[in-house]
Amino acid sequence: MDFTWFHRLGSPPHVYRLAQRLTPWLAWPAALLILGGLWGGLVLAPPDYQQGDGFRIIYVHAPSAWLSLMVYTTMAVAAAVGLIWRIKVAHAAAASCAPVGASFTAAALVTGSLWGEPMWGTYWQWDPRLTSELVLLFLYLGYMGLRASIEDPQRADRASAVLAVVGVVNVPIIHYSVTWWNSLHQAATVMQLARPKMPGSMLVPLLLMFFGFTLLFGALLLVRLRAEVLDRERANSWMRGVLAP
Amino acid sequence: MGGYAAFVWPAYAVTLAVIVLNVLWARRLLRRAQAAARRRLASRGEP
Image (cartoon, each protein chain N blue to C red):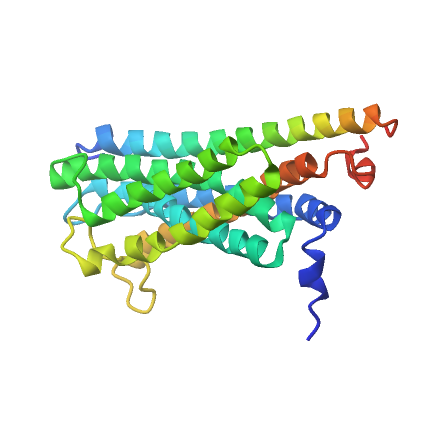
């Protein structure tokens, strides 16, 4: 089996050019999917029979929560690749994930609170799902804080990668918290495509938002990765070609 | 919004703000990194 493509992903010039080419192919479909999902969620989907129009928060809350988990998993895998194979670009990718993941984790917590007040009668509860999601935010902030506190980039890469890899244990805890413990939070609604619990008119806009948010993360990661690669490569001569006006 | 407007619209506003800020932040980061890289190359005599 030919692994040349994998080895080329360790080359900063190749990754920079690839990221440059791929970004618009992710960003524009992301914008279209999110706009379509917003229209479907706010206008086309009927009100829920129990939660009325309050359920429409799902169209921003669930995709934000999905990104919070997916971005952390991506960050942990990139950090592990960087640790095991000592690939600098992998550490750069992990570092590029963290601010995006942290911001969408915060969005998931805030939108969840705004959904919780009318449905549960409280903005916050020390519930397993909410608490483990808050721990995820602290893991992201810890990862970024650790990187910022170590001056030597290679030591910062290694130390933060260990934290990212260890912290990934929280991801299945968040996902299964609603089945392992008694929780105010509802059980999985979307992650059961074999037996979806929503009618198509509600589910399709939600799926558009999920795919849109995922592609948006891809585009943000590629832009941030290019910046991270340039910072790490200092004044390497390959950069002349990609920085030409 | 059937009495839920005070919760639904802020939730959408927060999420859209996070999306827009992420896009602006990433673009600004890249522009700054490119400008810094150009300066480093120029100081090495490699414009």
